[in-house]
Length: 454
Image (cartoon, rainbow, N blue to C red):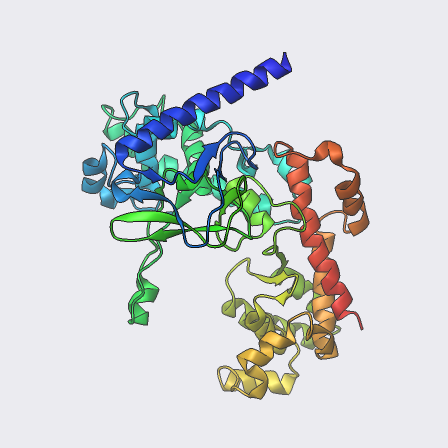
C-alpha cells in the first residue's frame, strides 16, 4: 500500500509538471533542449537535470518579464496600486502576498498551472510549521527558534493590522474564511523559499543608494524549480526584457542543475527554505556568538563596584555601536564580522585611562592596528592564536558560553548521531536537518576554542 501511495504521489506531481510545461509554452518561456524538469533523480520534489553535456555560459532557459508573478502582473494589480499606501509594512511583502492569496484560490487564475505545483502549499516544512516544542528541543542554541518566533509575531501582526482590514474592504475579491492567517503564513513561507529579488541598479550617488529600499520579491516560474547548493553550477541573470538562467561551469549529462540562493549558512537555509546542505558540503556555514555572551565573558573579571560601573559604561557604548541582539559571525575560516569584534574587544579591554581618553575624544583615533587588512588577518584562523591574551581569553569564554546554550555542548554526541543516525537521514526528517545545523555550528565553535586556548 505504501508503494502504491508513493506511485500515485509521483504520478500526480508528474501530471502537474506537464501542465506547468504547457503553460510555459503559452507564456513564451523558452527551455533549452539540453535540460529537463524532473520529479526523480533530484535532491527535492522537483529539480532540473542536464539531458546532455552543457558548456559554461550556455542559456538553460529564458523567462519573459510578462511571465513573472508579482503585484504588477496579477489580475488585482490595479487595486493593489490604488491602495498602495495602506499596504505598507516592515516586510514590504504585503502586495505580493495579497496577489498570491487571490491567484492561488481563483479557479480561473492565469497562474494556476504554476501555483498548482505546490498543492495547498502543504509540503513546505519550514521550522515555523514545527511545534514550538520541536523547535526548542531540536534547534536550541542555533538561533532558529528566536528567528521563527520573530517571524510568527510579525506575520500575525501584519495580517491582523494590514491584510485583514484590506480583505474586509474588498469582499468581492477576498474572503476572510478562505484567505485566513494560516494560508497567509503558508504563503509567507512560499515567498521565503521560492521568490527572487532583482538586484539594485548601481548608482554613483552613495547617499541615494543607502536610502533606496530593496526591490520587492517576485515569483519567477522555472527558476524556482532549481535547487540550491553552495557550489552551484548556474546563475540567474537579469535584463530589461527577460531573465536567463546561465551555466557557470560545464555540466555533465544527468547532472542536476543547481542555482544559488546566496551565501547562506545551514541555519539560514533551514529557517528560510526548510532544508539544509549535508555536512560538510555547505562552505558558507557559520556560527554566531551573541554580544550577550561576550558581555558575560567580560563581566566575569569585574571584582569591585568601581570596576562594575566602568564596565557598564563601556558596554553601554558598545550597545550603542551595535544593533540589538547583534552577534559576531564565525565561519570555518575565522570571524566574518572582524571589524565589529575588533572594536568590541578594544573597547572592553581598555584601561580606565584609555576609556576616559576615548570618551573625551568621542571615539578613538585610527592607528596602524586598525588597518582593515590587518584586522581581517588578526581574526582569521591563522591570526587568532597570535591575538593579545586578554582578547583571546574573552573570545574563548564567549565561545564556551555560546556552546552551553545548545544544552549539550559536547561535539562527540552529535558526531555519533551523524555517523550512526542512518534512520534520521532523508529530506523529510526534521531531526536530521536540525542535526546538520547544530553539528556544523558546534564544529566551528569548538575549532574557535582550540584557536584561542592559551
